[in-house]
Image (cartoon, rainbow, N blue to C red; front, side):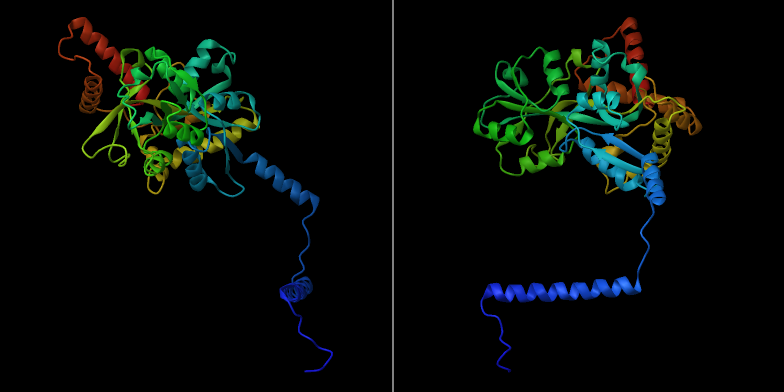
Length: 388
């Protein structure tokens, strides 16, 4: 080795030599690429055209916070419907179902939203957002969300009535509304779910309540972490029957929370996909209509694994009483309307309806003629709401 060539000593010097070598190699590669593969940069007109195509074919959907079922549903829509520049689904992380309605109603960048039907009805009744029926339309029913009420396993609390006066965290407006309708008045909190879990585990709050579609991955993870929690039953009380459905949480849903062969009674609420009711001659209407045609045609693909199991509850033909369906969605359903079911199918539906009513504790055997007529009218409403 010549005397004027010396290997650098120390880790800093070695590091400098390696960095210099890498930079030199990169420089040589860039120079070679520049000589052999030179490509002209896009001009302003090309870039402007790309921007116009993207804006003309992008739909933004708000779906509450990242922990709710709607977020997973929108991710599935992205994976199935995204078609490059022809149709792009842009997920928007929101706050909750009530805020999602406000966002669809007022934000120019939000075209669609996932919310609960009871919140639409409540906001329409109060008129705090004006006449929502003029500004918001629905595309179809998506899925049901079940009410989950968590307490510490060692708390001694066995019913939600015992939560009156105690500190209870509510993860959404619907859960809070259910407690109000049942006449239960806890000390309400609005903590984030991670914080609520810590407060519940430490005993600083008595319960955490939220509406979320079962089986919820976030809840399964929580239960599997040895949190020492259990679920409380929610009664399908008479005052809840117009807006909610009876449901249950079973061992298959949450193995760590519900014993095998057992279930916990609860209630469920319908979620719907809503849209800004844009004028038919507007670009916004055209974009939403394009989404409708793609989404409705590919619902069957969404209902297959590995997509969220809640897609199997989706009934796009289900009617939302008191609300107008988005015109492009109504047109699509008319073009693809199936023949009306035969009487045997209707009888099966009626038996399903009776089973739901019996599960709620209603007496089906002692109804007189007037009672049977009322029961039949309730069945017709249920049939229309479920889209059968």
